[in-house]
Every structure is written in structure tokens, then in C-alpha cells.
Image (tube, rainbow, N blue to C red):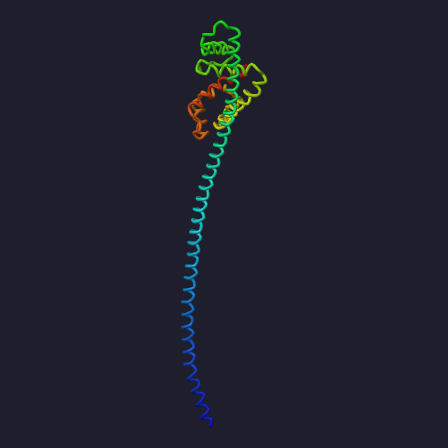
Amino acid sequence: MDSAASGVHLLADDALPEELQTFMTELGRLEAVSKVRAQELARAKAAERELSEQLAAVTYVAQKARYARLQLELDAAATQVRTEGARREAAEDRRRLSHITAQLKDVEARSISLDTQNEEEQDGGRQDIPRDVTAGKTATAMTGSMTTSPNAFAGDYQLYCSLNCIHRHPRLSHLLLEPLVRLLRELGAQYTAALDEKHLADRVAPSLHSLWSSDAFQVWLRERACGALTDEDMRSLLFIANVADGHVAG
């Protein structure tokens, strides 16, 4: 019986190394699989990180392009607002000038009527002399009392005569000429400010006539008016500026 028991123990001792070898083999296989899985996981993480970086780069480029587009739209809108503002200001300036011009024409008509009546009363015996010649002589005499030079505007002696008549009457001058002078000087001040030259503030302001005679100022004014001013408008404004200098000096 002892012999049988020792035979069983010998069989168990022989089987144990085989099971251990199988276990160790399986354990080695699992370790190899684990290493492969760890390598795959590392590659997956690296790929995910690369994709994240690419996505961030694409998102940044898209946002930058969107910002550039929005900036262009904002600049275009700002330009449109400035253009519309300039058009509205030019329209308002033209309206004010038209109103003042209409008042001047009305005063001109009254002045001509009064001059005609005075001429008829004083020179009743010279009815055959053309009225234009008489008015021309009157305008020539009246221009000598002002500091401007009307020779460049010989065709506007009636308007010059009317302006001189307004200039001689404080109330009419306050109502008609002063708003016009303020408008002309406002435009001149805006032009000077647009030059962005600080040293100009230390200088004596140029006369209206010299400023409005400047080609650069006329180009600036035409651009500001968006092409609404004609050559005739500029010539009339130059004439009025010339007379306005005489108004201020007087």
C-alpha cells in the first residue's frame, strides 16, 4: 500500500512541471499581446493628438479668414457711412447756399429797382441811355468802397452791387452775409483740419479768397461733395468768398 501511494506522488510530481510550463507559455503570450495592445494604444493617442493639432490649425485659419472678411465688411460699411455723411453734408451745404443765393437775388432785384428809380429821379433827362450801361457805371463806382477785386468777375456787377448794398446795412449783413461767411469759413476749417498739419494752427488763417482760389482746396471740396459741384458752382463760390473777404474787412 505504501508502494501505491508513492507511485501517485511520483505521477503528480511529473505532471506539475508540464502544467507550469503551459502556464508560463500562456503568461508569455498574454504579455506579448499586452505589449502589442500598449503599442497600438500609443499610436492611437499620437494619431489623436496629431488630428487635434490639425483641427486646431484648421479652426484657427477659418477664424482668421472670417475675421478678415468681417474686417473688410466693417471697412466697407464705414466707408459707405462716411460717403453718405459727406453727401448729406454736401446736400445741406448746397441747400444753404441755394437759400442764401435766392435771398441775394431777391435783394439784387430790389437794389436794381431802387437804382433805376434813383437814376430816373436824378437823371430824368437821360431816358435814352441803356439801363445796363447805367447799372455798370453804378457797380463800378460801388466796388471802389470794398477791399475785394471785382475785375475777375466783371460779368457779375449786379450781384456785386447787391452784396455791397447788403454790406452797407448792418441788419441785412447780419441776416444774409454772416451765415454765408460762417459756412465758407467752416468749409475752410474742415479743409485745414483734413490736412492734419498741426503747425497750421500757429499761422494766421488765410483769407477766404486765397483759400477758395487754391486748386487743392477746390479738388478737396469737389471730392467731399461727391461730384455734386459744377464749374459754375465753384466760380460762384469763389466770387462769394471774394466778396466775403470784403465783408469781413469792412
